[in-house]
Length: 310
Image: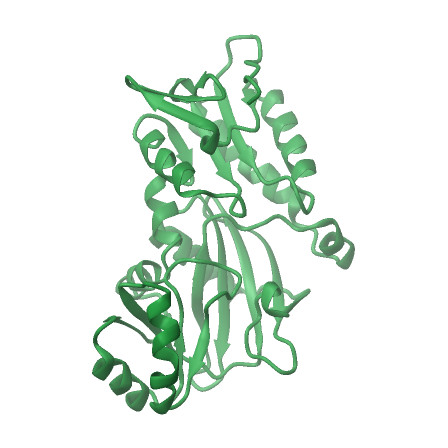
């Protein structure tokens, strides 16, 4: 395990743990450069999974991370339970982006939908049932006319998501669901939409970028890992307003808000709020999805303000 090199000087210390694939390394270099221009000292590669904690301190690769002025965790693909556990602990003594509270909320689909719904932000109809409440599950299928989507409350990329269109499917699916060892069922009513979505990127309450995804011809899921494809699209005032409000409700400094257009209700619906939305990849930038520089600029301003060098 490599030891952390502490930058010389007396400026505030910012720690980063950022994904490196898909252009993440380039984004990190630009962010570090801009923060250094503001007088911050930056330590990269602070993966909390490479830590040991005891006697009142967390040492990541030998560095006491609670001496940081701010910690930015931006790596969804390599999260481990241990890393997440220490993230919660670190948040109690160091300013984190996103905060642990916002991170934890956006990692849970039910908690996110519940918070948004209570705040008046339109989501799909949803229901949480105990895993033994098979009657409740079947009743939901009847009430929603067989337009039910089962989702794990945690996870990303469309993994484990499937439609339930008939009560008879339950008997077939129950062995699979029980193998997941989930304490409950999280269900959403399937929305009639055009098989495309919006991803609206919000940083510090500001709109910074937009793109969309399109489901393959033989599926309804837009997730890239489920066969969906990225498309360019322009954000209108309505989706921007909803996305900004959704990010505010969950308390996220950084958010990628996924929306679809409900063709029946003729309004936009928030599906998820992602706390670690990826920057555009080089391939996506070549397509014209070119919001990275603005996102880095707004993120730099946000960090600078939080550490007092704005």
